[in-house]
Length: 170
Ligand SMILES: CC(C)(COP(=O)(O)OP(=O)(O)OC[C@H]1O[C@@H](n2cnc3c(N)ncnc32)[C@H](O)[C@@H]1OP(=O)(O)O)[C@@H](O)C(=O)NCCC(=O)NCCS
Image (cartoon, rainbow, N blue to C red; front, top):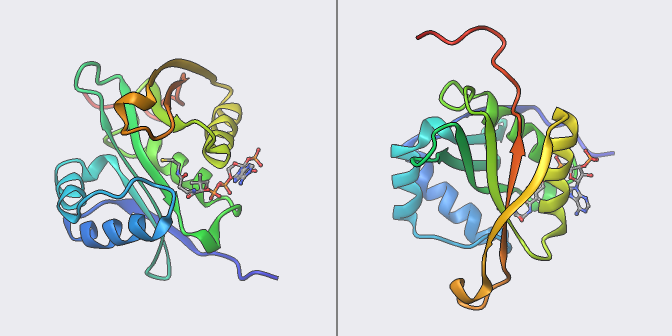
């Protein structure tokens, strides 16, 4: 039997950048970006992202931001779970923690893209929408031609997100 995970989630810090870059390079599925990109994201958008750790070991992460064109929408850029921890609820727990962050919890909708053929990713987001009683709606795509011939990224919108438990301060 697998050991139970003691999952702890927290927002990103700039010093998570190098570990996130290495994690993504080792993931094999996610598009790798430079270490600089993750340092920048963790510094400037760290309050909008999450890492999940098990006794200090990085098990997964989410990066995202409020859409500057419409901050009611929370955009999820990347989510990844360590290969050995997949299928154990970490991805779902990361999504719950992501939408519950102080900086994210007033958002009304989550948007993300799902690469054509990425069945675990589609299952994760569909299960999340189902659990919230929210709709899962395809709203567009970034065509393969824009992505150096990589599979099309289908844009989906999940709404509504859960309302904060207590009213937000003005
Ligand atoms: C996508 C990913 C984050 C899912 O994380 P995870 O921790 O395995 O997901 P969970 O265990 O929380 O499962 C969430 C739901 O997805 C389903 N699911 C997860 N992996 C699946 C798979 N390989 N096939 C079918 N369903 C799957 C689960 O059954 C669950 O649905 P349920 O609640 O109806 O049972 C993980 O597979 C991963 O890191 N993949 C590589 C990176 C990636 O593709 N990221 C997404 C694009 S940014």
